[in-house]
Image 1 (cartoon, rainbow, N blue to C red):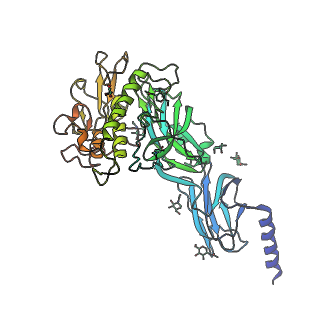
Image 2: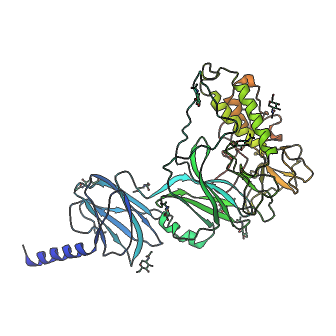
Image 3: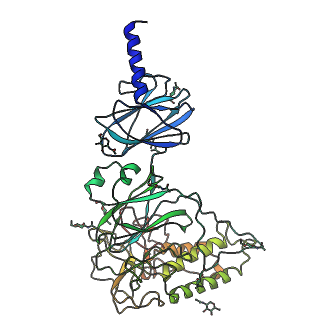
Length: 478
Ligand SMILES: *[C@@H]1O[C@H](CO)[C@@H](O)[C@H](O)[C@H]1NC(C)=O
Ligand SMILES: *[C@@H]1O[C@H](CO)[C@@H](O)[C@H](O)[C@H]1NC(C)=O
Ligand SMILES: *[C@@H]1O[C@H](CO)[C@@H](O)[C@H](O)[C@H]1NC(C)=O
Ligand SMILES: *[C@@H]1O[C@H](CO)[C@@H](O)[C@H](O)[C@H]1NC(C)=O
Ligand SMILES: *[C@@H]1O[C@H](CO)[C@@H](O)[C@H](O)[C@H]1NC(C)=O
Ligand SMILES: *[C@@H]1O[C@H](CO)[C@@H](O)[C@H](O)[C@H]1NC(C)=O
Ligand SMILES: *[C@@H]1O[C@H](CO)[C@@H](O)[C@H](O)[C@H]1NC(C)=O
Ligand SMILES: *[C@@H]1O[C@H](CO)[C@@H](O)[C@H](O)[C@H]1NC(C)=O
Ligand SMILES: *[C@@H]1O[C@H](CO)[C@@H](O)[C@H](O)[C@H]1NC(C)=O
């Protein structure tokens, strides 16, 4: 061998020994590194290498799965692959039978994370969005995407036992991920320049204060993490990301806090009404940051609700549930669940407010509070939320609610929440929803999710959803 080549080989080997660091399988490593560094990928068959940038920078990453000591770079070569970044994330999957190397090309030191996994990318930008409960002037309820399935065992005949009307909260799964939340004013320049990765966002100060965080089974879509945030600014458009185990990041959602005069407090974490997570027309709860939950809601509200759900369940069980079937697709358990959701939505009127700068500003002086509800298609130019002003003199839509003592607007329930009961329950119960063409818009938001015509085509309404990820809320889905 030519002496020069040998010298060069030695040189590479020395450099390699000095700067290469070994990556472990199924773990995440953090580095602040420059172009002189490389990282050894262990030999282990099929692996995914994922990288996440922790600050705004434009490095390039190269990986090779060849058994080589030459550092992969933009000059390419056999079995050299670039890991392309998108919003700070990148990944490459392939066979590492003889191990491999990862290298970075950057000007200066760049903080980043690497994950090597035999089970898909450790760093991920998920397509699942976070979910907004509701806001007040300075609080918000935010949920993660569902992270664990709801393990409801359908009851069986002859022991067809339905859940108690006064449900107790189920025990969260023991293997819940480690969730964090990141909230920033939507217009913040820091937010807009940062890569949307767990390490970049977790290193920033999140706005607001987390007053509580826990797993919650909101509905049959599964377990979500629930955050109650306080100390937010009024009338502000925020962006929220949910971060799982520091490496997986949700699709962001935007939400808008209410104006400073908005008086309705939040209600949430009610085991018998697990879907309720919004502002309700009640006087202020005991302390400033507090929300209404099962411990401080007046019994004058909860008792009639649970009694009526108990009575409904009794009537439902006069049917030989589980032995006879009134439908090939739904059961008594579905009926009870949809009825519970509807009853809770009706029993807890929801407060709302037109978004300050949003296109859904309530421009009419007022909808007649006692009569008309809102049809999504009432105005040709824009879709208005199903908001109906309630003058102080108006009796609350739930007669068991004490006087709120100030004006507010109610956000009507979506008609679909009622129709779901109609579809899930046996007809002998006589449950009927108002008819679209006739009186439905008097008490429900009509034509938002399903179309407003008599067919009520699913998802073909003006918005197709009760709320979107931009912070618009059209009607109360419960
Ligand atoms: C490297 O990975 C590519 C893509 O998976 C594969 O085609 C190639 O055979 C691998 N090379 C080695 C040396 O394993
Ligand atoms: C990375 O290194 C650079 C230069 O040494 C330094 O300015 C920067 O603060 C470091 N970043 C982190 C996250 O340690
Ligand atoms: C992995 O990278 C590919 C592009 O190389 C990208 O399309 C895909 O979304 C990435 N996967 C994840 C989970 O980020
Ligand atoms: C009937 O089912 C309930 C709940 O599924 C269970 O707690 C109870 O023990 C069962 N009773 C009998 C007699 O199997
Ligand atoms: C509404 O617009 C004003 C003025 O442009 C701005 O200061 C405020 O943050 C905006 N509010 C929201 C919720 O976007
Ligand atoms: C959860 O993740 C955060 C941020 O990644 C970290 O600071 C914290 O130590 C983790 N907690 C646990 C219990 O792992
Ligand atoms: C519901 O159950 C809780 C405890 O499980 C109890 O404290 C509460 O009084 C019950 N509510 C009603 C209305 O029965
Ligand atoms: C439930 O039934 C009982 C007994 O028939 C009755 O006293 C009670 O008023 C009913 N509750 C509601 C909310 O209708
Ligand atoms: C929040 O801000 C975003 C970005 O400017 C905008 O698209 C969205 O409509 C705003 N949300 C509301 C409810 O105004």
